[in-house]
Length: 188
Image (tube, rainbow, N blue to C red; front, top):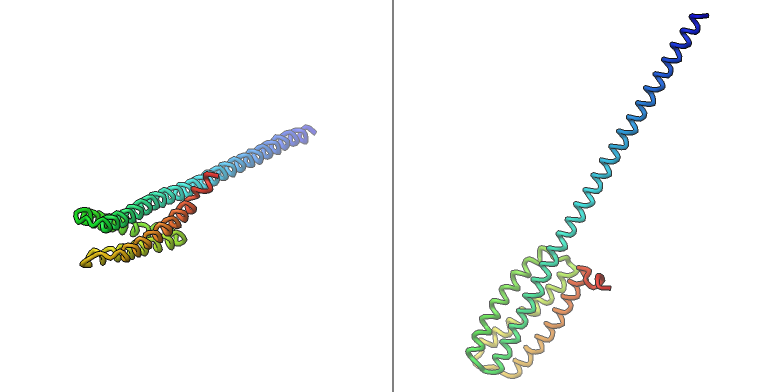
């Protein structure tokens, strides 16, 4: 009987130890699973933060491009209007200065437009293209007028009407850029 008692005691100790080992193994597996889930979650958060940062960087790049495009387009058009007024005033020195400034502003818009071709989404670029074509069309008319032996008032009126169309197209472009940036929604 004593042998049965000793075997029972040893068996109970062995079963208790196995049970403790099993529970310890489960705890370690749960801890490992929890750590793995924590790493996976941290990796997911890092990926989401990286995507958000890329989005912010792209929006900053787009915003800078829009500012440049808007500024250079407005300056180009202002130069066209200045030249138009100089031609109307028949002031050769003023006409020459305005023509030089117009050329500088045209080149600045060309550079800004080239950047926009690489950055701007198609929905906004459609308006950018329309405004650029209009401005360049008016530029061509002004250059032909400069090359003409004398300025006709009818030509000046026609070009003035073209500048009004440019204002409308530039306004459409600004609206598209603001919409793309969410500027109008942000102010609501």
